[in-house]
Length: 99
Image (cartoon, rainbow, N blue to C red; front, top):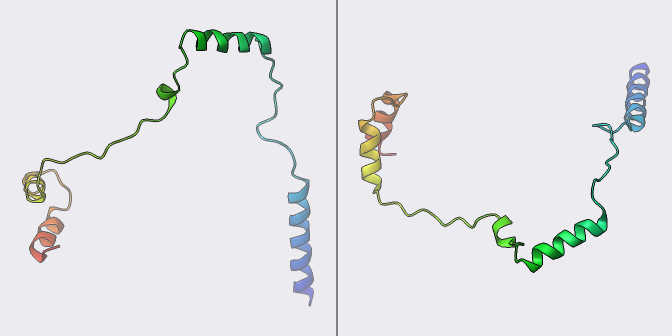
C-alpha cells in the first residue's frame, strides 16, 4: 500500500513539473524589420514587372531515374576484382552459395 502511494505521488510530482515547464527555448528575441511593408510590396512589383520572379528556379528539381549501362554480371565482376573491399571471405561465400 505504501509503495503504491509513493508511486502515485512521484507520478503527480512529475506531471506537475512538466505542466509548469513553460519557458520557451530558444528565448524569444524581438525582431525589428529594416523594411516597411510598402517597401517590400514595391520591390515585389518591380521584380514582377522585370520578370525577375522565377518560381521554377526556387522549386526543387525533379530527378529522373538514372539509366545504368552496366549489367549485373559486370558489377559483380568489378566488385570481385576490387581488393580493398572488407570481408572478402564473406563475399566469396555469398557468391558461391548463389545469393
